[in-house]
Image 1: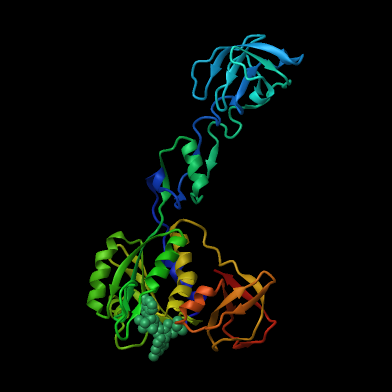
Image 2: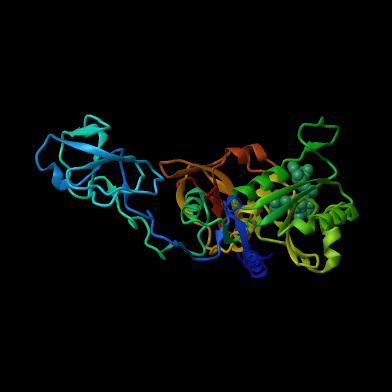
Length: 395
Ligand SMILES: Nc1nc2c(c(=O)[nH]1)N[C@H]1C(S)=C(S)[C@@H](COP(=O)(O)OP(=O)(O)OC[C@H]3O[C@@H](n4cnc5c(N)ncnc54)[C@H](O)[C@@H]3O)O[C@H]1N2
Ligand code: MOO
């Protein structure tokens, strides 16, 4: 059997980072910056007031209280500024440019709030409540480097330096196709032998969680020709395709039957539990990568975590580092099949112990939903007593 590590290495050798494209800022959340972005101007662009109050010459406040005539009013956005001469003051609002002559701002709370003249009850030294031009960013300074994932605050600084469009590697577009004649869309009534399709929901959500854009395609039955038709129709909008089901040894395995003859998708047994049957390769003229994941709900999810998530990172242009594993002490005994690496579903507690959830079958989706980690049991280990230190992969 092929090792988990060898399978991941083969997947990553096929996957390429998506080509950068120029995108409207509004759409750029979750994408990866593909250029260094600098500011064309200093930020703030001009000295401005940090408070609502009065712009003064600090030397005029040498004896307190002092009454000064108010010669102007400057709101944020004011373009025309009258200089503050000796013995004068100008009423100023937060964010408004500091007029020439003034070297300090006195907050309104330290005054009687007058509009024609004002009584100032407290002194202020030069620079008080003034935000200097360039204090945040110098003109020409790089504010975000290529390779940064754009979150809300990164989007904010891009707007803050005046960008409308940016070069990014987009979020991978992932088409998710569930296969199986027994599957019914949730919300519909189950007939005999039927179950609700959960995999396409889990996988599409996992894609979004990992920073991709997912398209859940309606259920495909057990006919390989129908599957190929659906796949063909979807390829135009796919950077990657994920299918679930139809890859093992049964009489009706549409994914395997449809893709095997192409010669570009390999179906193999990977030495893991769950998730042993795996298909991976490329399809269509554009060689779109396709993950043909096993149908058991826990198997398809674990396969996503181990193989698809790193592939999406690579497509986004991010470094693919090995999964960050933690260590924990087992709260109960564990079992694992000989020769396969187990990813048991567990609950990791803050005291550093990890307990396997009740229900370790590959079909036990409810048990999976209670887990917060995968407990890794190496290939050569079949039993572990309680109290053993194990590696865990947080979910
Ligand atoms: N004779 C053998 N039988 C099986 C083997 C084997 O090596 N020899 N491998 C087993 C393992 S391990 C797995 S994993 C599964 C993989 O099966 P398939 O990928 O072909 O998936 P299906 O047969 O279509 O479905 C398996 C199971 O999962 C349920 N399922 C499928 N799709 C969904 C969905 N979208 N939502 C919810 N549940 C789904 C399906 O009803 C089946 O119960 O094969 C074993 N058999
Ligand atoms: O390898 Mo299967 O994935 O046990 O359920």
